[in-house]
Image 1 (cartoon, rainbow, N blue to C red):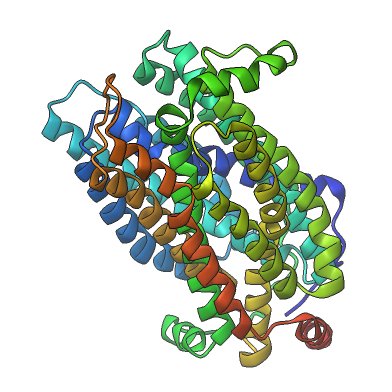
Image 2 (cartoon, rainbow, N blue to C red):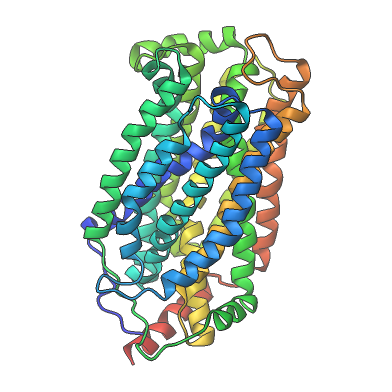
Length: 473
């Protein structure tokens, strides 16, 4: 390996972070609104929405990402291995995102086919864009502290995207469509696609790849896969990523149902009325409540992200990640005990949950970059993209399973899509379970797995120092 300066300018960190801001305008929309879009806007039955999100998502996870990882690791251009993919996919990703959230006037069977095709292409282009983008963080710098800093910048950008989608998007959908949610969704996604494309282009022009494999390094895909199969930290991070994104998709996709069907509207109005003079105008109390609930949590999550780097530098990524994830899970479980009238407790618990989850957010991807270093340290070969592609398998599979569980569990609890009548008591109970007990289980399993992850603070220092010597040679 050859490596230039390890230090990154603020401009490059911001430029890199804009790529994740752009990608998360798509990703956070999938996490938060995919199930709701398919059932209550697009008009699919819950069982069909479950099948589309699960089957297409799993195919994308286990086919697109490994193939894309192998291709990216073997890409060689004057711009590097990973940056070109950000350039090549910027415009197509925006176009397909718009198509995937459009509502054409087809028959029901035609709608199902259209959903399968557009969701497939959306996940394909997302993999071709976001996997090289994620792998880029492993070759921008080999400095562990700078990598932690880069992850913090990146996930502050993620939080901004999450803030927009989860706070304002529901209200904008209603307002842009004058009550027609289908037209509103298309209008909002059009603007997001344009903005996201511009930000991806900025990422391409402001970043640089510094950790460069030696020209003589050659490895086959079979050798890379063999290295992975013996890399225990990689296996643990793959499963951990899968579990985490099941929870994120499940609880994120359930909040809109939770506020529409579970939360007591009179108590919600009473809770929100004192705030209305200080907040933007929303179409109704449900939209405002959902926005404040998500927005307050995200803003506090930014404080957690800000603390993340200093905690990880001092105590090591693994320990901080485990502790913050476990505490955040306890606050998820607490939602099970709240009746519909306990609006203040719901909002307070969400803020505490997001603070501790915010600490863990940037550490996950920094840990995956460390796994790439661990593989290089053991095998004397670097295969950054395939390491990240495996994690993207976990992410996409977790997203697919979590999103499908939202629609599937609601169907099992007798939820009726697009119904103006009150939901059955079982459906209301299902929405409560979807933001409490069900999403807490994958998080707790992930915490247990991390006890076996060997890259602690001591190992981080060892990897960084020994790889610097090798690369200098």
